[in-house]
Length: 353
Image (cartoon, rainbow, N blue to C red; front, side, top):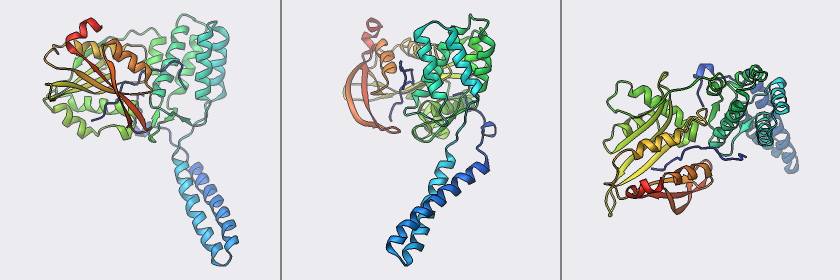
């Protein structure tokens, strides 16, 4: 089983979900236009090729060109696009003029660059988390500026439903409700607990975990709900979550299992992830602190895998005593990337932390 490491935020950097019926859909007319234009373009290219061969070559060229054009049009029609109103981007300019910090101005410029794209395509899933981290940094700076708070609320509300695309084709829709709470001074009470496989709310929790992991890692790197239920019910698997005490919303998850080895039993941390909007709530610290509050001295080692490029996640793991011991090429897909294997000695953990 491959671990998908916590999507912590790279600095500098290159989802609450809506129900299906709430997701903004691209207009049918726009889709038809894309498909038709692609088909015509394909036919034109095919005709030119056919002319070279003469006779039936023109007919064959037209047919092949049309087929290729239709396929291209269908693919493009699936890529949801959205153009933010100019006043949304103007708000970022206005905020930038009134904030003196050079570092924050750079952050604002980067957020503007990302949101100005017609299609927001991320090279890594954790870039979605990076965007939330930057917006949260700006929100923290604005909290004490009463003149900027009203327009920042407009900005955050205006981003809701903006689609972003992952390397595996997954589309996630932005929701900055968490940042709005932060702006309004709402203090969240977070609790960290181990999921009970016999809990009557297990199905609802599994659904939340599924959505959280799809947001962190993409649909093609996420187990099905049935697979999660089977995993969470196994005696050798333990699942830790951080949730909002009032809403019961799961904001972060870590699950591990016991594996036998020639040296003795060991713990394999198989999943670590948090919601993108839960930036700066120290979700990762809470998950690992809860893990290491257990008596783990019976295990020879604890190990996990992490994307080679995910520097902030690696830093978190080092904070809790993990060290790199191996690099495995092409371990991950979407995008393909090497993984570091990191291990921790449970007996020495107190000294490491």
